Every structure is written in C-alpha cells, then in structure tokens.
Amino acid sequence: MGQTLLIQNATAVLPDGVRQADVAMMGGQIARVGAPGKRLDPSGFETVIDAGGLALLPGVIDAHVHFRTPGGEHKEDWDTGSMAALAGGVTTVLDMPNTDPPTVSLEALGAKRKAVAERARVHYGLFMGATRDNLEQVLAADNIAGLKVYMGSSTGGLLVHEDGPLARIFERFPGTLAVHAEDEQIIQANSLKYRDAVAPGVHHLIRDHLSARRATERAIGLATRFDRPLHICHMSTAEELELVRAAADPRITCEVAPHHLVLTQEALDEMGTLAKMNPPLRTAADCDALWAGLAAGAIACVATDHAPHTLKEKAGSYWQAPSGVPGVQHMLPILLDAARRGRLSLERVAEVTAAGPARLFGIQGKGRIARGYDADLVLVDLTATRTVDRKDVLSKCGWTPYEGMTLTGWPVVTILDGQVVYERGAFPRRVAGREVRFG
Picture 1: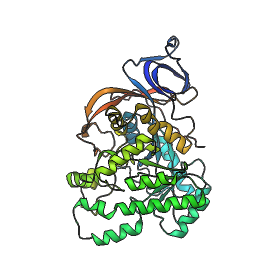
Picture 2: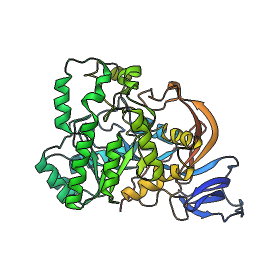
Picture 3: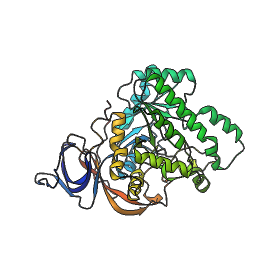
Picture 4: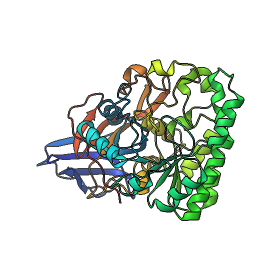
C-alpha cells in the first residue's frame, strides 16, 4: 500500500472524457491526474510505466460472480477466480450467495468473510440470499452488497416466489434488491410440458420469454409499491428492457451479461450443455436490443454472472448438467471489441464496467480515474487481436463459452491498490484483496 507508481502518456478514460494524461498513485490511491498537455515529474516514483499506445481505464467492477466458496471449490476458488479476474482487468467483484451452505445467515456470512479474506486477490463485496424466513438475519447484517432474491429456481436451493414472502422482503429490506427474474410457475409448467425432451435446445423453451417478462413485471410492481431500489440481474430479453424503460424510475436498474450480448439460443444446438445458463440464451433480435439499450444508457452495467462448472459436470444430460458459464476473464475484451466495431464508445465501456456498478451499489472509492479514488486501474491495448483459447483460461473450470472468438482489445497491465498485479500473462506481485465498503 505504500508503493508509488506513475503511469505516463496514457490515453486515459477520465470522468470528463478521453485524453492523454499522466496518473500518479501513492499509498494505494490516485494522488494526481496530470492536466492536459502537462507531464508529471517521474522523479521519486518507485515504478514508472510508459503507457504510450495504451488506454487507461478504471479497474473493472464485476457485480455478479460465483466464486464457489464455500462448497464448490473443485470448480473455482478465490485464487483461480481472482487470477482470471485480474487477467481480465477486473479489480473488484461482488459475490453471490448460492454457495454450500448458502449465505443466508449471519453465521454463514461471517464464515464466508473469513474464508474469502484469506484467499482473495481482488477486492470484493458479498451478497446475502433471501429465503422465506431469514429477513431478520439479513436486516442485522453489516456492509452487504444487497439481497439476492431468486424468483425462479436456479443453481442451489434459494427460491422465493410466493406473494407473501416476496412482499415482506420488498416492504422491509431497505437496500438494493438484486433479483433473478424468472417465473417459477412457468418454469415448472414448461418442465412438465417438455419432460421427455433430451436436446439442450429445449432450455429456452422451458425458461421462455414469458417467464422472464412476467417475473420482471412482478418485481417492478413490488419495487414501485414499496418504493425500493430494484436491480434486475442478467437481463436477457428485449421485453424486459422495455419494462425497465417504461418504469422510468432511476432506482429500477438492470444489468446484462456478456453471453446474452454475443451468443444466441442457437449455441445450445452447437455447444450443447456448455451453453446452458439461467436465464437462457435468446434470439439475435434480443441481443441487438440489449446492445442498443447498453449504448443508450438504459442498462446500468455489464456483469458476467461468472458461474463455472467442470467439464465433467457440464457433460451430463440436459436435465442433469448444471446451468452457468465462466466469464470474468473475457468480459472486458468482448466490450473493447464492441467499441472497436462502433457498438459502444470507450467512455461507455468504462461507465458500464466501473463507474456504473460503483454508483449502483454505493461502492466507496471505486470506479473512476480521479484524485482520491482507489488506485485500481487497467491498461489495455486497443489494437491487440487474439483468439480466445481454452488453454489460456485461468478459471479452475478450464473452459469458456467464448472459445474461438477473435477479439480486438485486451488488458495488458492490471493495477490493484497502486501495484502491478498482472502484466502480459504474468502475476508479478500478489496483493491481498480487501472487502469494499458500501454506502
């Protein structure tokens, strides 16, 4: 934390726009951002990086990951998940509660905090999960990212879909309600309807557009009724986006996952259960609508829903194979490639990966390249072109749904607390991640 670092001649994505700038870091914070056309004196700095030809962005905040601790360490842990994150320019993650045991009590939250603090190599925050009867435990918890509400069943046993418990949660929880918006009744009815199906392509029929729309509409209705902040996780359809837009309430927000931007439901036929996730992949028209909403500011952030499973687990039959895909290592390259293609501006990339999630969840000191903010940054080469290859995956699961995609724009240096922790495939220094503060 006491080291000093100066980045010179970077194309920096600053709160007031993109320009050449020097950025000085001291004591884990950004100490100074050089004025336009002015160079900062490099003398006295322990490390100086000439970033000519590189762009400097705030470190990415992935607001939706499953690093599988406790209970799923055979497919991910906070060592491997952190390394995958850092290689992807991600410096802060918010971890979900559907672990084993789930994070639904003060005891479970304390045990998870202890386990994560011992292993994390990125900064982190933790969600608690909602059950029908744990609201008092949640209300007594300190410094959580929010409350995750599974309105439809997914990985793990967390599920709250009855009217009474949902209304109590929305009425009493004052923080951000992060909702998995799929309708359980529709899922169960469609599961019965397609019970004899064996092809993975049935997944988007079981968890169909109506399931997503109805749950999102219900969640927005509850949030409006009780005047609560609502965040729709991993939005997948154009109809849901229109519901959020129609609500016209700044406290009702949504995120999109990279897989719902670049993969369509046809991938279930091509990749089988490797492309199975909840909610499922949708149509090309849905992808286009989500890209447009992202560019226009209707979607608050991009978050990976990084949910690794082993290849052996994913090789099961459609009904047996778990849902979820890894993504924390490849989100930023996917978005940088989109910027190159004109789908997003570079400023918008920084907004939806850093400033947006920091503001949305009230993460203190994160998300901007500005004096006094934490020195969590990423240098990217906007001209580097690489094809995603399984052998480069750092997540313990060892595979990626993006394999074979050729992307232009890759992280080359990741900085955590003002120290270089990832550089062109290597990890020169290990820095302990810290729990972020919310509010």
